[in-house]
Image 1: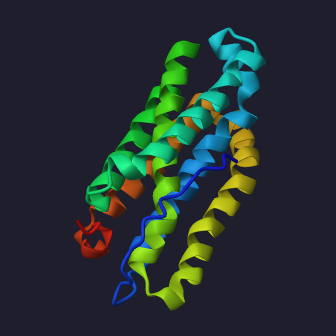
Image 2 (image 1 turned 30 degrees about the vertical axis):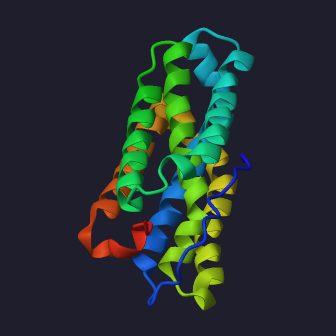
Length: 205
């Protein structure tokens, strides 16, 4: 799994817990981690379908990781005063587009573009996850929020590759990425829901 930096900007402690937003963040980070791990178990069918070697197909994983790395470094500064809900909406929308581009990619170049978009979304969620947890719950609940967010990451890391391989044998590697798109859509709708408490998502000026 890609090791990425996080936004460490000091934040004020919230007066109350907003667990719906914590679970939404966990859903986002875990679904992105799962999407990152899917190609690992699908390199052989991907390479055969796109008429490239498994090694060339493996560059898809590298592309995701590189873009995620640079995104995680710069996104906190670039979006410092941007409402976090708006940013998460954009990142989740990018994740949906990424899955669909990969699913319908006619060649390796288009596949790489799709997975680079995935890296953009992945790096953004990773960079914000820790600081978001501290904005959403009081200090004495931060550990619990971290366990929810990063527990989902652990499950996704362990389950994504074997599940992708299993489903790939049934519905094909393209079908796996098409199936991943509704999960991204669910995340997008969860962030859009007004009941998700907008205030804590906003970074003070």
